[in-house]
Image 1 (cartoon, rainbow, N blue to C red):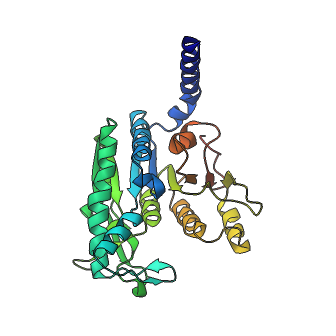
Image 2 (tube, rainbow, N blue to C red; image 1 turned 180 degrees about the vertical axis):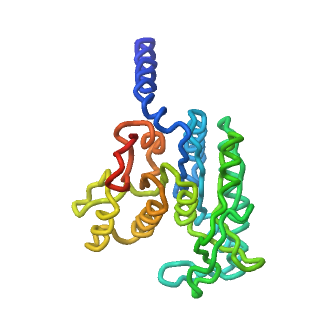
Image 3 (tube, helix red, strand yellow; image 1 turned 180 degrees about the horizontal axis):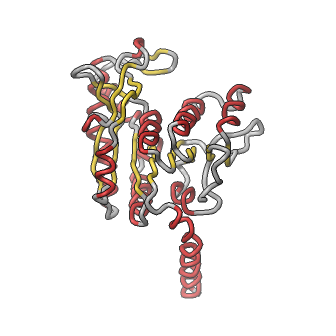
Amino acid sequence: MRKQNMNHDWIATARTLSEALPYLQRYTGAIVVVKFGGNAMGDADAMAEFARDIVLMRQVGVNPVVVHGGGPMINDLLKRLNIESRFVRGKRVTDQATVEVVEMVLTGLVNKRIVQAIMDQGGRAVGLSGKDDDLIVCEADDPELGFVGKPVEMNVQVLRDLFDAGIIPVVAPVATGTNENETFNVNGDTAAGALAGALKADRLLLLTDVKGVKNAGGEVVTELTPDEVRRMTEEGTIAGGMIPKTETALKAIEEGVRGVVIIDGRVSNACLLELFTEHGSGSLIRKPDLPPRAS
């Protein structure tokens, strides 16, 4: 019986690989920017699974870029250093002391942990921040928020050089400023969207802790156009923490990204489900004149 079950598993695996062929061909050479964050960052098994998926994407010819956050780790170190956090309209005020902690945590602890996880799965990865080679140049988003940056210039040649070398870029959302010796903290989704736009990426995948964009009935909407997103926002159906993500999606699409997908990162192999299956995963936002998933 055990041998029969194993044979069944092997057949199912082979069938899955065979059915994935059109999607593997579809994404060969494509640039896919993945915003990684949430609970998975603090869980060793989830981190390893994510890294394995990213390595597989690179192995089949996709050019992935990982952009990460690190809010819980930043909060933990600020607390241990007795640096008080202050918020304005729900956003953290980033003073000089805070931005130094942000840079330390994101470019050091978090970035290198993800790089190591990818390398442990047999991939090649290099950790960067937006300050490297002026990858992301910012100006202050809001004077009240201090060193919180809004990207105004993107220099993505370094990422293309890494693609050519078969290396996966892992980017921490810390940026340089337009003035000398400035450092800015950038929202992870914002940084991922800006990089995806500059690269004219095929897909921007925003991994979250929710299933996707929901309609008024609480059901996940699998595909939306920008106009539908704007209408649902005006009606209040899209609200709260989903608004910044959909705003990032709309801006990325305006800048040339083919499609943005808001995905539940808690689901196993969420990125692979989106790219390499007919069903996909989460909510795809795309221009109405473009074909649907995986086409």
